[in-house]
Length: 559
Figure 1 (cartoon, rainbow, N blue to C red):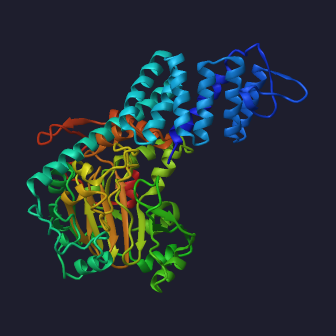
Figure 2: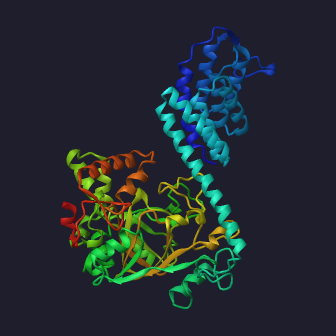
Figure 3: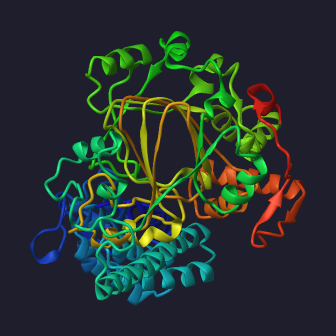
């Protein structure tokens, strides 16, 4: 279990303890509590204040059980108080004694209902154990107490817990209603899936890799690997030479709809290839990652770190069949191999990028600004993987759009509209407003017993092959699998179609870099012209160029 939010309050509680007036009574002490609850000390007496200091030292050293025993003795000898009960609760919580910690915090709040830190501990504790209704109630109490006492840090944390608990309760309620609806209708694949017959899933005993190979080789339809009762929609496709910027903008970017752009590589780089990447970047170090069900905290991508090696060494292992599922994943080219970008171009569809604009502005204002450094160097990035490798279901960071061009191989993409989130089972402890979503469904190896509603999900599916490009709109959950050894280059970006969304997403972040990015985006938004599109009255259009052209890397970076 994760106690990160609960533990974060230990520092706050410690400050409260240190500022508490010392008790005047004296107690005896002997290294811990003795029978009968009366602490003893060989060779002398200890004041209540000294005992409290000793308990704090035990906690600081990691001796949480001993510290808890000390606080029990202090309460017995020096009297009960909200502060002492709270300190006891923190030690019990750190020692993993959840029920006992809850009793201590409840007692502290009975004695002093205005203690925001204890309400925060209770909100975090109940949320982490999945007691969402309790977490919601405690978070509301915490928000009220923090507002009245001016505890801004605690207020922000409790507002986050309240939002996450409320969101999780809403999604669980939606899931129950949706599952009852589908079962009552007797849905059996009428929406476009294949039903149970022919579905190849990880939970049904079928070899999922063989199922993917059959789709790759044209021997099976997408329905054989998609949600077994769901609606499967094939992604629209256009030739790069025929898809105008205006059509892309109106029908895909502003409608948050994916599209495959065939033969787009010619507009990105005529010379970009694996051979060129090896020649220019082969000596650089890469940090491969590999799929793992056990990995948490990676935005649902489920990729564990593998041992670093040079790109040349990795490619040799991949060519010799020794990659063992390891991927070069999202490797930043500007940071690691900038020379590869000399003849790189950004197609007109994606050439308005406010991330690049704000990073350039930030760098000019402060060359040491980490926001400028990271955003300037993060994209485009390189993806290389062996056959049947890939990550988990996730949503891209920062509320960004995404585009990719495939240089070699074939990649299976499956993605969903944001409204499909209940079907994908967000972890109740995740945050559905951020990319840190941990979506529990694995679309390649679905477990319909654990996640029955996924069987009725509607999804887009497509295979993107050599020279082809793909646009994925912001907020779209997606999972990608390499059907054959593949190489691709991609960029995340923010333009008029998702600027407001990105700022809204980042409003809920607690990470310094993301908050700094939000402020830069806000400043940029305030400085440029905005208008409301007649066709999309719910969206503002910022700094829009109606006949945008492809941009060379140099001109793209100069904007």
